[in-house]
Length: 229
Image (cartoon, rainbow, N blue to C red):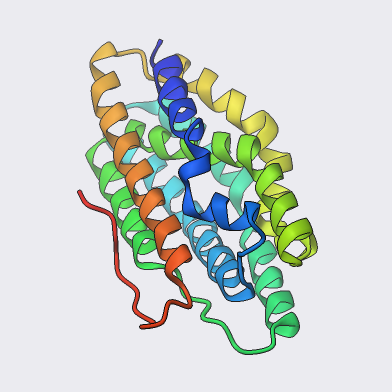
């Protein structure tokens, strides 16, 4: 089934977590307040953008005559509205606890990912499932461990990362439901390859984002978009 192929690709990516720079920093207690702030700012940016993407996916599905897919996105839109307030509260909390101001703009790869998500929705709203499957599944599987390491080893409390912690809870059901929905609504086997391609691009942008977080505070202060298409 299409969903199982996507799940397998995501699990292969997660199996390499030890080589992920953000995971390494959190594990070793080296993730700084500035890095966490930028991480939360980038996550909040994507959460803020989600309702617009979902609404566009719904409308695009209607244009293509896929009313079952449109109905699914219409329901999902109701579930996602209002989550950005968690990230905004986190950024306020981090600003109060930091010794110096930290940037609260998304990283370049995060902005590039947002543009890519918008593009695949226009191409085929079903391709949006590649991003949704990744973001929800990874949050549920890796989120708790990452939060615990940042809290216990880096000294930044989970209470300042609720935009992730709350999604860990609400996405427990969403992640599995999402895979089931893919099987129900994306029955054409010809869509497997485009979905895998979209997922690969999403993974690349997220890898780029993690490298950008790791570069924060580097001697030259530079920041670059490190994803290679």
